[in-house]
Image (cartoon, rainbow, N blue to C red; front, side, top):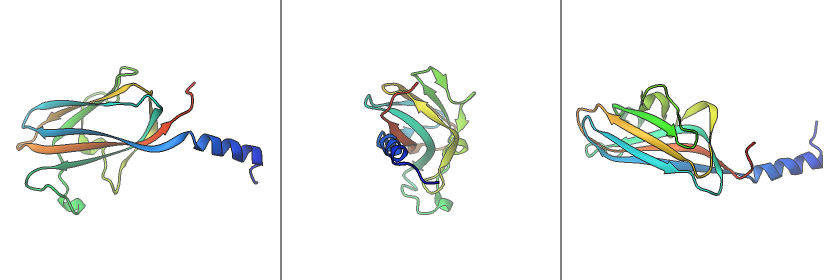
Length: 150
């Protein structure tokens, strides 16, 4: 059955209220047995709906990964906290590869996660590496939602 023009206009209007967006978190030189915290401020113009998670880790020995076989898998735990609702996303900190995929195969959340505008995503890293990891980048992939939330 074909959409009526009214329904099509409503759909197009709703679609214009959404924009693909990625927030990034980064920790630089996470030393052996050390912890670090990074935070992402959700912009005030829109809410953020998180759908997918990816990571990239690099060090001085393997600064660029060309295949998944050469991909660095960091021995790092992560805890994510939505400071807007004061809720942690995990019961305990979890290994990065358990909840962050690759750019080719991202981890898709079973349920998209809403972060309200002006809230903060806090990321706590804890390293169990035997050598320092120079950089870990986490990508929070989803879309900005410019409409009201009820």
